[in-house]
Length: 281
Picture 1 (cartoon, rainbow, N blue to C red):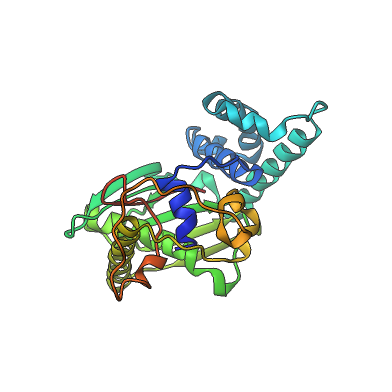
Picture 2: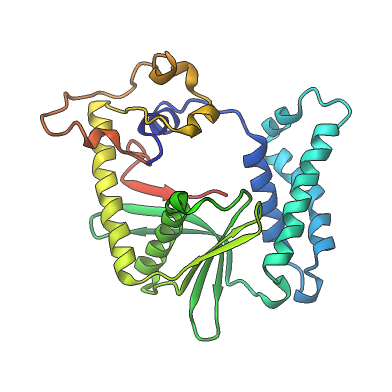
């Protein structure tokens, strides 16, 4: 949905991307908030959460040594110290938005998967699921950036509706609330979905999948320039920046009349099977 050509580079060409400080910091903060709930409720304090940061960073480095490249040349450790301090402030801010001593999540970092009647398989990883004594379900997602302006809020909300659709189709339960916790700005945004919302998301996903399949068959993946292009790792091979994409690795058929517009869309993998997945900080 962001950029079909970027999708092709990531999923079909599998071009490498450099780790970013912002995304890695998000992963670190997510890990800390997940692990904090291992402690008894009374012990879920800000100092305890902040004390988890160094250990969780060590675990991330052990699992992905390439993350050490983020601070290559930082011989005095100043950049790393500053970066960890930013993670510390994000964790601290969370305590002004939610009270973990009053929460007992039913699930944390939950992998979910379901198959629609069409055969399309949906997958995702949900940060947290809370279940009230009444049985009401709340899906919570942590964002380490700032809350978007209203005109840009649809993207994160679509992600949450995607999760709600998976839960609905998997368990037959429409989540009572979708909650986005923005640690970067200290905002909490909520949305209460209804069945009609989830049905619309399902129809949109099916249309997106058809576009993905068509683009995969024809090789017609087009760039969609936005302000986000400035952060893209693939400018050297993007036509918008004077680059040439690598040779398309799949066999193609010519696009037929009327298919042109469909080939512009696409959020996830065609070659890996009939599945749409969402996850991440």
